[in-house]
Image (tube, rainbow, N blue to C red):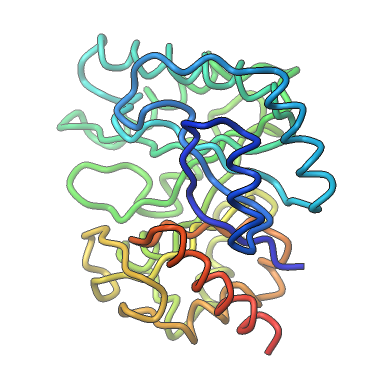
Amino acid sequence: MLYIGCHLSSVKGFENMGKEAVAIGANTFQFFTRNPRGGKAKDIDPEDVKRFLELSEAENFGKLVAHAPYTLNPCSATKKVRDFAFMVMEDDLKRMEYVPGNYYNFHPGSHVGQGTTKGIELITEVLNKIIKPDQSTIVLLETMAGKGSEIGGNFEELKEIIGGVEQQDKIGVCMDTCHVSDAGYDIINDLDGVLTDFDRIIGLDKLHALHINDSLNPTGAHKDRHARIGEGHLGLDVIARIIRHPALKGLPCVLETPNELDGYAKEIEILRKAYEM
């Protein structure tokens, strides 16, 4: 089965996100745990969550992907910034237990001149503080485009972070098709080779979710600019091969293309048809 959806606003709660997902033909979705710039999260209404969980079961939803605020940098050179990332992520994981058994995705961060080794050390330190043995949520590192001092622009860096995490069953990866292409992995001409490399370096058992985005830039550009499906350098044929790939079937596929709900509905319809071809 194809589990596909898009990024939805969480402002009106879980039940509203579920209804919006159903209305556009989605059976999964992604949402920010709080304002994407950080700050205090909105209180969770247990009754709203209960209604959503009932809807989710009735509609046979796949796993959800929660997204941490973009502004978090757990490997900042500034302790205050690292502490803020820890505080937000720890709180987010507690809140995720209202919708147990899903994913929490975050950008590993930028080492801002400290060097990759130090950056990885700091990210791992934060993860070992926030991840608890009894949590049901799996934390996902997102593959990055490798711009500037970003960490996570290659599989080896993600492997090092994962290898340092104590709770191995609570850590994994979300692969972004735009980012991984921009990072230099040739998913256009050699998808099998890229997935083989991922399996050799990290392990496909650690790949839990996909961000499905076209890219405004060619392979290796290190830019990170998303495009609508079929309007970028990847194209519909490549995206279709990704969602149909045997090694990736069953993973939640989340669109983060520059769209409103009607645009997402069209892309979901297009990709469902492509999946069945």
